Picture 1 (cartoon, rainbow, N blue to C red):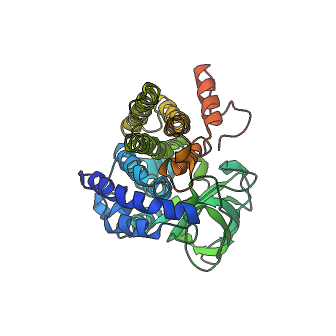
Picture 2: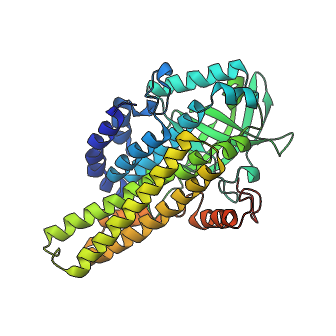
Picture 3: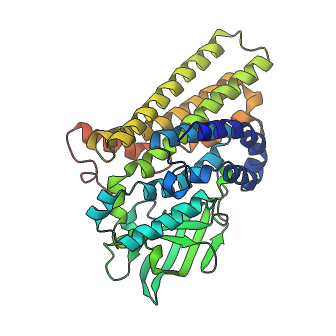
Length: 388
């Protein structure tokens, strides 16, 4: 990737920021933001250049996501879902495809989906369910063979971009063998129903509504062309399920520092040593979290799936989530009561930042994973509940 994508993200961030308050207030989807992302070619960020995309690395993705989040964390979060789908699809090398038994026709289908993204299609993720969260092994959505394809039936929650995306990455369990979990790219249209349930504390503009499925899709919409790959991919590419959020919350944290500095300067409060101390500590904390995210991303690009890489992936998610919440709270306290009014950027950023620790994997789950690893155990198998 050239610097085009990063420059585009920096150019778009002020536009996203200008619209953020309205969409946060109304809980409305920022459609204009996504038109801007499409026109900038960013839906093709993770698509290989041979298929018309930018061929970005994971590290380059994190840089773009951080800049977008400095404009509007909700927009960056939905974009993250699309990048996760296209990034995971684009990362399936010929060697990995052979090891997983992916047939040639499935690779051709994958390439068609990626080429469509490079042309402006964007994909959402429909994984989480009520009572199961994001644990793939606990899903209740099921699929079974149908004439010329697959029939899926179930309900998803927290589906960011629901009702707006061109397609949805849906995880489901086999009706014949519940231990088999597969993923499908389901096109928008008949058989999908959006239930407007999203009215949240933070990230209010993500339209993360419930999605109900009773739909039949063509055979080539089974990703990988082989049943049962979802859990395998989760083990091989935890960075897309865990650390891709981290870059977004680093951007939200940095936006909180910027908003606080603007507020304090405008009100002649910058001369207070306690206020300056809060800004200084927050600046250092955000810089540290950003360095951890960058290190995790560097390792993902060099040695994806490696045990030490994965430790950095979980560290990045933990530190980004906790740092965003801590920094936003400190910046709100530094700015004072006037910044708590609805519509003030810091009030919105405080609520958005608080969501970072709650996104899967939650901060408690991340800390537990890292604790087991530090004790010499296997974090993916030695926990009290299934990771996926």
